[in-house]
Amino acid sequence: MKGGRAALLALALGAASGWLLPGSDQEWVAPPEEAARPNPVRTSPEAVKRGRSLYRQHCATCHGERGKGDGPYSRLHARRAKPPKDLTLPEAQARLTDGEIFWKLSTGLRQANRIFMPSFGEDIGSENDRWKVVLYVRELGAGHE
Image (cartoon, rainbow, N blue to C red; front, side, top):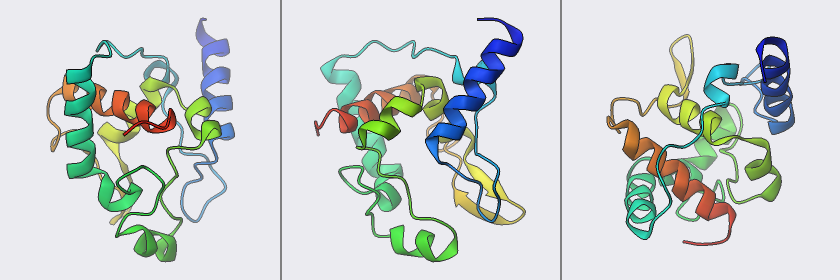
């Protein structure tokens, strides 16, 4: 896919995902080139185990241990903007590409001085480790832990 078609696909993925920017009718969408990135890390028990460990350390406080969007900080997010996404829902899994999950995990979502999702680009400094978190998020969608 080139140029305009890739951009339209990314826009459609973002629009279908329901990830509205807080206080806005705009979607939180990864740039087309980021959404199109494939996961370079192969699925293996070790990679998923590492992704699970990192997810629990960095993501579970909001998204919950099982990815249901019910972590200890989920109520705070619901009051400030929107609750964290339930990452186990088939429609959420289908709407987001691996590249978009990686980009959102890496860049986070901030508006002015409000952080709606932290950036984990530095906290999970290794790109390979962030891709392993993506593998684990996919496992959540498949009903695995």
